[in-house]
View 1 (cartoon, rainbow, N blue to C red):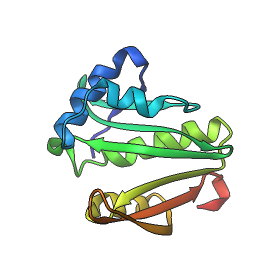
View 2 (view 1 turned 60 degrees about the vertical axis):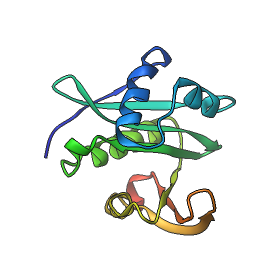
View 3 (view 1 turned 180 degrees about the vertical axis):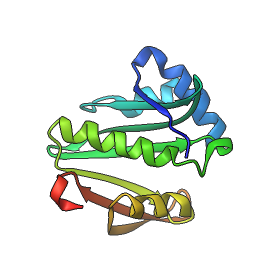
View 4 (view 1 turned 120 degrees about the vertical axis):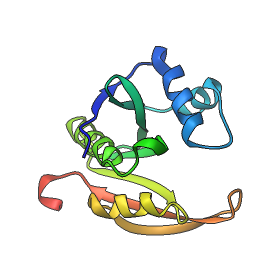
Length: 152
């Protein structure tokens, strides 16, 4: 298991996330894609995972509603998967959200992203629903977990 350096980044470092996003996901996006998603959001959190100063993964979230923090995107570069970096990002996200008064963490994953579904279950999420994503023609699985110490 690689021990990644997890840091919270600022808006000025957004180009690093955009570059990494475009190495992980398709179609490619630009900074405006992220800025639009952040508009009107409270407590936007962008975490970057690095190994030897190389960006290898990220986690982006924001408040969904009072008490609930939502993970919008998690990505790990293909060359670094299987090294528990996604797990480290999720655990760091949970620590931050809990320390900022959130009671629950939620996110959605496409059914075809099996590694993300497995990660969710491994870090204590429960499946709380599903919905059809007509744009991607796939099922989205909805996950939630309490952030309290005695809940998992």
